[in-house]
Amino acid sequence: MSRQPSSIAGIILAAGMSTRFGGNKLLADYQRRPIIRWVAEAALASQLTQILVVLGHQAVAVGDALADLPIDTVVNQDYQQGQSTSVISGLKAVQTNYSAAMYLMGDQPLIETAIIDELITAYVKSEHDICYPSFQNKRRNPVIFGDVFFDDILALTGDTGARAIIDANPGRALAIGFNHEQSFLDVDEEIDLNSLHSTGTN
Image (cartoon, rainbow, N blue to C red; front, top):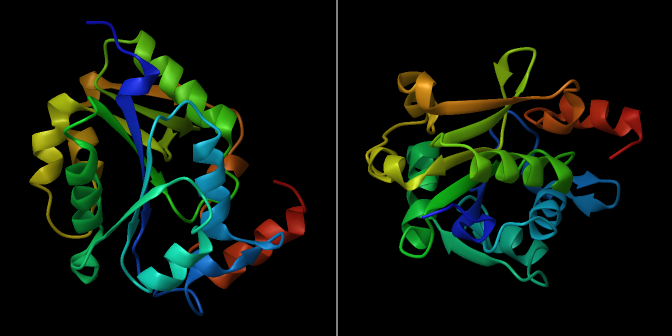
């Protein structure tokens, strides 16, 4: 059966505690909107059929920032045990209806719909089971995983996310090279957000 963009769900990870940021970074203002909202709106405008946001730390506040958008949410009660718990929570909510999942980070406000769609198109046309963007041979997010790896994702533990799965299966992963890094920048500390503000672009 040929792959279709409609078979891919988008999972936005938004449960973290922002321990290196002075407050919840996902609610921090970037160009008059919370950071998480930029990611959600970019995903909503893409070919992804369903957008699911995994909440955890300050779930109510983060959910409220997205309340008017046509997205689904799930609360990861175990978010303090590491990112893998959010990765698993998101997949459990969509795995029945989709044959692939794209994981997006909630702290990448410059991610573009065009990039999301380029990754989807590349994955659909390929025979690879993982697809991710690359800048100067370094992996970036978001990442698409086919259902052949769903069991491996559900078995993850700790705070490593799904990086180990990519590391263990390089021949099954398709890297899409980009010649710019800006769209993939994330916000970990306040200095990162200040740097984005100084660019004055999105």
